[in-house]
Length: 433
Image (tube, rainbow, N blue to C red; front, top):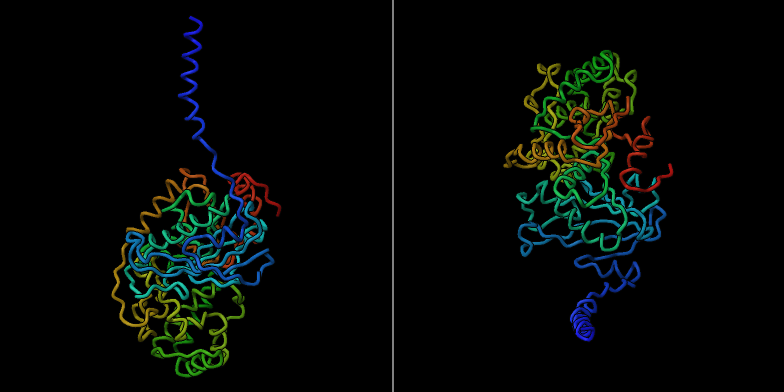
């Protein structure tokens, strides 16, 4: 009987041994960081001088399908920049809503002293498909671009990932989070609006309540003066472009009216000029014009930037939305911009159609599933008219800095400790700040 048992155990051992012998551990990856980087498929890499003190920096041109639902179809290269410290350190991922340069920064990368990866948005310069088919400029396809890049670089950077962006780039990180929620461990969205429609009326309500009544009245009086004295001010307006090495080809009167409408928004968005300095009735034509060109983003009306921002305007008019202008105080003075909209900033004939479904979907998802997101806004920033309000269904937090504008960052916050402690809890790391 004992011999029988021994034979059974012997035969079992023979059968089981091959099973264990086949379960080998994956071999350790002994490649250097540079070897891993240059082995990434579909990525053209150019080493550059590190502008922010990182160990290495690289320009990346990443092969992407124009349509992620048709990976065998047309492709384009997407420009990105990698700033490397150490593979084990966190990665701050910054998918832009516009373009990026080697000098583009992310506040969190500086705070954490970690790696940073910034990406130009599809259809912007250095990331332009050919042919330039607007059908493929959508929130979801851009999010798929960003997912592919994260997927590639997670083969190298296996630590925590934080996505971060401001304004339209803040929208980009929220959109990416919605479609690929497991790509990053936390998201910080600065001044990111969730805008409904191509003339969202919440912006008018905001403009009628921001700051003090006295300041709002000064702004309205100033805008009225600009239109009342347009014939004498427009020559100064036009002079700004050649003085700044830019060309201007728009209809002069229509562009000037849009500039006046944009002034109100620009004054609050980057609150660089005190209300007491807004010119009044006694100001000269030159003083009225100089104040406008100081406060306004004048380059928006130049030929180069009208073309550069075309993808932004297309997205605004088809999916991401646009503010309504405040016009009641100017209704008797406007000649051309009587029904102002973002279409003005899309050179040529706009043929797209606004679809509310993507933003409604994202808004609902953020309310129910948008965990590990920090929203940061400035009280005076007009984009705060469309700030997102987290619900109790998620662990997301929102911080509104009093009297801050569109440039607000973590370092400006009264509640900076709350932001840092929240990130520490989510990421499981210590942050020295």
